[in-house]
Amino acid sequence: MAHAETDAVKFAYWVPNVSGGLVISDIEQRTNHSAEYNRKLAQIAEKAGFDYALSQIRFTAGYGADEQHESVAFSHDLLAATTTLKVIAAILPGPWNPALAAKQLATISYLTNGRVAINLVSGWFRGEFHAIGEHWLDHDERYRRSEEFIRALRGIWTEDSFTFRGDFYRFNEYSLKPKPPQVPEVFQGGSSRAARDMASRVSDWYFTNGNTPAEIAKQVDDLKSKAKANNHSVKVGVNAFAIVRETEEEAKAVLAEIIGKANPEAVNAFGHEVKNAGKASPEGEGNWAKSSFEDLVQYNDGFRSNLIGTPKQVAERIVDLKRAGADLILLGFLHFQEEVEYFGKHVIPLVRELEDAEQAASLAAE
Ligand SMILES: Cc1cc2nc3c(=O)[nH]c(=O)nc-3n(C[C@H](O)[C@H](O)[C@H](O)COP(=O)(O)O)c2cc1C
View 1: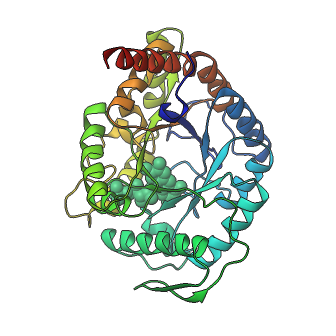
View 2: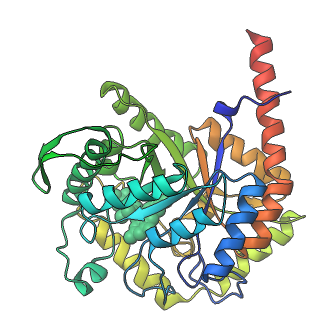
């Protein structure tokens, strides 16, 4: 049966544009942050059925990520090396301002047939802001600034004469020419109350850390009911670190090795920094609020989504996450090139079969 494209869960992978991979562990990783490795990975991913790649922005070393290539330039390079993949460039307000970001992204959209998107990150790394001489705002203030940033981007991209009076940004009858051929989609990272409130007003996509379907469903219910009240629609992306092997034992053994070889000093320092960053989030529901040592070994709680097992187990769990409200699964891997290819061959087809079966069952019930 032909699959209903619009309903199919989407797949994204983390671009390893930062050294050390996606886990804070000394386990051997064949992942590499070079341009050559990443271009080939992007080509493998689009062939394997991935819709998006997500680049990361970091300005300073920390917690295993000693070297970091800049996200917008790197994303453009990957777009130039591919034909259908969309690449999400991470943007951090503070170092970026909306005028430059809007102009830069409009040109990349023009150069790449409208395939660039952005991930507006609000920041968690105080030491990084200090190192580059940027003001560090309180948690909820960071989201107020991010919301203005997104409103400014949209206004610049869509209006002929854009005027904006915010607390952080101002524009006076500004006309960007040419406009991007496609208004870039806006993703956002963060899942605290402030993050959810912002997503329910302005973001196209809400990215959250890994979690169980039940916990994802709680966030999605809150997010969607707020968005409905605002007459806005927002989709949901959930992070996961996938370990897919022929047997469950093998997959679990890899997880045990990653955690066993975790660098405790780096993991604890990262945990301290992210929990501190969330402290000003008054309700205590932000990313990492409940993360254990094991969770923190993967930067965005990716083990919690439990995509660790055989292709069949992983496909079924992806469909469970979809039922909880996930429109997209964002994936990290240990050995990216080999595992993205394997995932495309052995997991995505099973997910599509399960989706088709579910669709057929619901049509039969009508
Ligand atoms: C999928 C995802 C990607 C993120 N990417 C980045 C990044 O590239 N750089 C960065 O500094 N922070 C990144 N973040 C962190 C968020 O911007 C935010 O600071 C963090 O999730 C704290 O959110 P909270 O409001 O829930 O506490 C990312 C978060 C998520 C969920």
